[in-house]
Amino acid sequence: MINPFAYREASNPLSGLAAGPKTLFLLCSAGASMTFGPPALALLLASGLVLHSLARIRPGETARALVFILGLAAAAALFRGLAPGDGRIFALESLGPSALYALRLVAVFLFARVFYVSTRVSRLGDSLTRVFRRAMPPSGSRGQSVFSATYSN
Image 1 (spheres, one colour):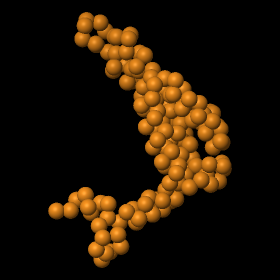
Image 2 (cartoon, one colour):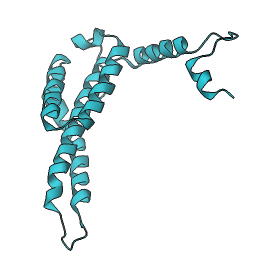
Image 3 (cartoon, one colour):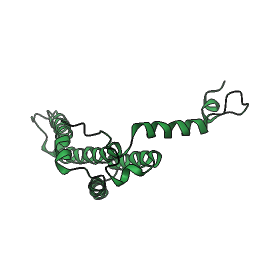
Image 4 (cartoon, helix red, strand yellow):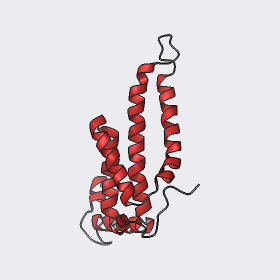
């Protein structure tokens, strides 16, 4: 199986975007996917599919990779509903929240896949280095960085 998160050299229009904003978008979309209710989650899933199309990710590749995610979701549903403590073997009412959790995992997967397919790891490292250099003062400076002010005595 091909690595579903492997970068693809300039094979899509999203590859030209800077790594920093894409990272911020991934964090926001993943957070929203794990927080929002079903109507907003449906919009997130739809936008994830649109981004997959823009990133030129073939549906067959995504389907193969999603098997693992759906396996995790099925295991979570099984454990969530198994032996609820009232004498039943399985609580059917746990399937709704489990399905919502599965859809949230799928949404995060879609956004993460687009991010990794379109972002070179070295560019991400360069972007993070620039952020930390701005936050840290040059050596020998008397000013305090964001980090040293937090942990000073």
